[in-house]
Image 1 (cartoon, rainbow, N blue to C red):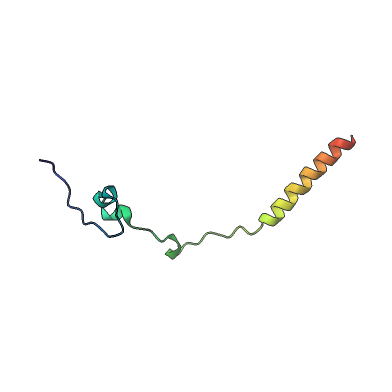
Image 2 (spheres, one colour):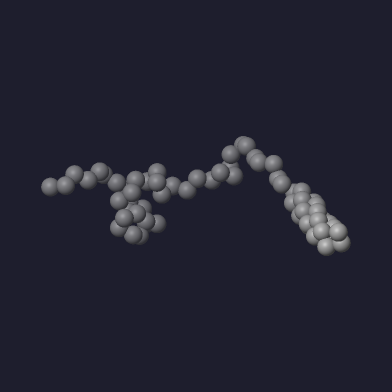
Length: 65
């Protein structure tokens, strides 16, 4: 006889493997509800412009000389 842990199944776990998993495994964490917020990286346009300018300048300079 096999010993199985007592696990309450949820209706969202339709697959037999997911039904055997503990409830804390299927729980979805909401990371945005926490008090810590990450700073927004809004300077990607400037970085892309600088990278494109440097690449064009290097290619143009290498073809001239």
